[in-house]
Image 1 (cartoon, rainbow, N blue to C red):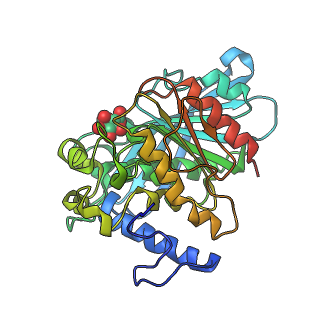
Image 2 (image 1 turned 45 degrees about the horizontal axis):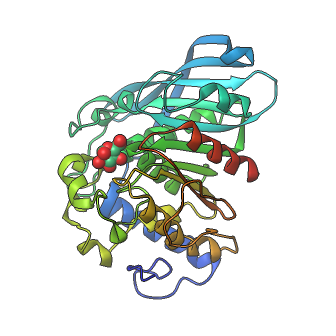
Image 3 (image 1 turned 180 degrees about the vertical axis):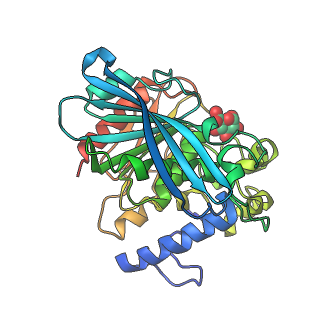
Length: 353
Ligand code: GCU
């Protein structure tokens, strides 16, 4: 496979051949992805939290649910984002999954909440629209609390949603119920893109659960198949997810600059799980699998197994989890299904620190 630009090569053309090289290359890639794709996020701001409600017995009685109000103290004002936090009540610490979701309902169709708890996880949920609206308005919610650079590199909405997830983690990692070594972030579709970008940047996150993320997520642009969404399409309808610099790229012109394997690779040496549905041609499950293959050298230079798969098209039921990048393909359509959550939870449990 000839993926251009090369992952394991610095911008000046010199090779990335040691672990120390990769540390520098990752910084270079994150900077490239900020400047040319997602936009630079605002400077970190203080986040405070208030627990406003506790349900001591939920989901069958083995867990508690707290309503937490997270307040971001930003330069142009404060903004509060509600979060649901479920925790098993057995007195032990548990790995955390932080889900950024489309709706604020704690028992949503995109998450089998009770099953996640029964599998021994703490589970936190944010609703993306509580952070800022899903449109080109950069003045509402948390977006309105920062100045946004107008030189083409200013954060798009994906970057801001990921920023808020990081702010939520600032608080979650202070909770004694949560096992800080085993933190996962999760999201579906546009929020799968968001979860990936969040984990790419934040080394506190051990697992990224990236579901149906497609274009601008884990689908490699240069290998897009028929019926898949392309950069041209995404810029036309959802250009505000990205920084303005990204709008100049098309499938053809991107090749010399960047592609999605670079974002996935920034998760190395941590863990990523990529999942898609067979009929979700818009997200392009095959290009997602090729992306896993293309990102794997980042793990290998660190002495870890990257991806236990190749760039051929997967069959329904595929679950490749012998490396740090897991990939599964289930039957069906674009959805965050229980059949996605099961392999994700397995991947985490197999790789707990
Ligand atoms: C649209 C968009 C995708 C996105 C999806 C979603 O289909 O084109 O890029 O992933 O919405 O978020 O559901």
